[in-house]
Amino acid sequence: LYIFIRIHEKQGIHRDGLNLYSDVTVDYIDAILGTTVKVETIEGFKDLHIPSGTQPGENLKFSQLGVPDIKRPNIRGDHYFLIKVKIPKNISDRERSLVEELATLNKAQNISVPGEVLIFFLCYCRSITTSASASGPDPRRAMSSRPPTHPSHRSPRRFPTACCLLVLTLALLFASAAAKSSRRPISDIEIRQKKEACYTDVENGLWGWVCRSSPTEKENCVLRCLSPECYDLIYGGDPLEEGELDYVRGQEYKYCMHKYGLLKHSQLLKDRIVGSFVKWSDSNYYSSRGWVAL
Image 1 (cartoon, helix red, strand yellow):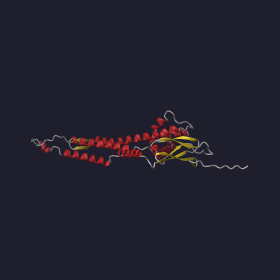
Image 2 (image 1 turned 180 degrees about the horizontal axis):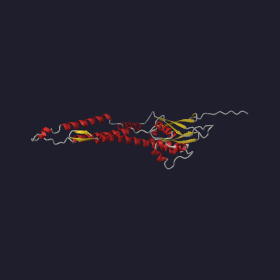
Image 3 (image 1 turned 45 degrees about the vertical axis):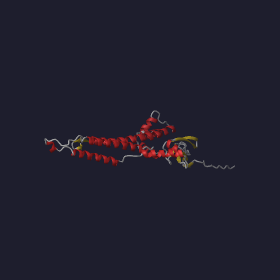
Image 4 (image 1 turned 120 degrees about the horizontal axis):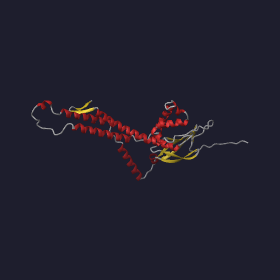
């Protein structure tokens, strides 16, 4: 008795070693705002969370939902989903109007003050203070008993104050515009590169021997290395346990990294620019000769 078995390839799922690959097509609005879609895996249909700001060509995955290793059943591959964004060819007049309004808003938010402009105003400020101090009362004329013919009613000290306020205002505007232009989510590639660096640090013993005691402890240490703030927020009171696979908290952790990384970057950029100006003003003082470095 001969039994012939033919295996038909599963449509929509491709295999490469232990990993599986599928394509997911989402609407461009869902890619911008984020959504959850049903995807097919070898264990049935599951919900795949599409984060807001997902770019075409990014890969999302379900860890350990790939093909099991025949010789080592405890080891399984991953199931990757390639994101494809669907752009409509025909849209209504109302949709076109909304898209054009969004494009106009983006152009207005991306207006920034170049650094050369700030340098120009800073030099202009110094030149005014120098000229103002040079046009002050002549010491030889001050020794004379005759008062000046046309007394000045404006103090030259007001010029550097106004100029420096102008420079500080431009610095704040530049920081705000730069922060707005940098508002993009961290890509999965950047997260993956940083995670690989954390794995290397943990394996080299930089996080202590406890992190190398088990695969679960290693994963907890890598998550702490990747973002300590997000780890404390998501896993702080309930760390991963042996054999635990928590997809929901994994997606929450990634979402936290996007938001916290953006806030931290914007705040550091603003503090760096404002701090540079404050540092310069603290190291100079105003005298009758203008701004003098300490």
